[in-house]
Amino acid sequence: MDINQMAPQLIGQSLWNGWLMFWATLWPLVLGFCLSGLVQACASRNAMERVMGSHKPGAILRASGLGMVSSSCSYAASAMSKNLFARGADFITAQVFMMASTNLVLELGLVLIVLLGWQFAAAEFIGGPLMIILLAWWGTLLFPVRLTRPVQERLRESALANGADAGSSKPERLGSRLRSPATWANAASYALADLTMLRKELLIGFVVAGMLSALVPDTLWRIVFMQNQGIWTSIQNALIAPLIAIISFVCSVGNVAMAAALWTGGVSFGGMIAFIFADLITLPLLLICRKYYGPRLALRICSVFGC
Image (cartoon, rainbow, N blue to C red; front, side):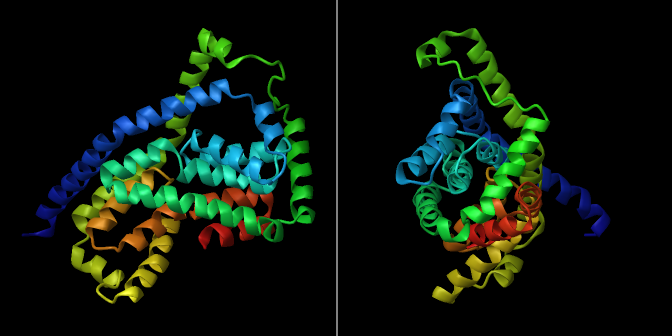
């Protein structure tokens, strides 16, 4: 068949495959973002700062828990982590929050189950805490105060210069907040804001995933990702998959759709987990980290999350 005749058919098939993936993941996305919006509306930012001022085990656990019920968008998580750090949160704890909010959130687990299976969700929720433990363990050496303190002061001064609101310090019980119509209005606004911020990444993720599933033959994936070589296959796949994630520009939820396309192409289980965990070292996020924290800290963040 002539390429001019095949092109419309392949494009249509790519878009259809991407739509099917989006439809399958729509309900967990809506559920997750609604819960995330409610938490953001009820949680006091000043309280979050007070409980995340160090990287002791209690602060790490609190940051992990708050991250799990926060936004799943890598870009939103990066911005929130920076804001927490600027307001006094410990740098390591702020990075733990970002890691938890992109790798341990509810909607990510639901999307993984829908598109890839419960085994991938289990690996995500086992590997995520292990990564957090390693980050908290080695963080003191990788992110010493002599490097993070000047950056924190610069971010705080920038926030004050821009008139950023540090959040209300007025105490209010959770029950009172839940009974307030304003809380639910704010929750809806937060949820819509997260979805709006995520729309480009989701679109790219599902379109690219649809194109990969329709245009790239399984034989090519088997060439790129070495097959049937035992442990060497897992090692090679785990090295190659993050490189694809880096150039995909897709955030934590969006790249699950692309991961599903790679999985059907024959990529190993370990390679897929490495691809999914590499959502924090995409090129746009690395540039954002460089802008926030400077090149030295950005390079260290890349080395930590890339490993």
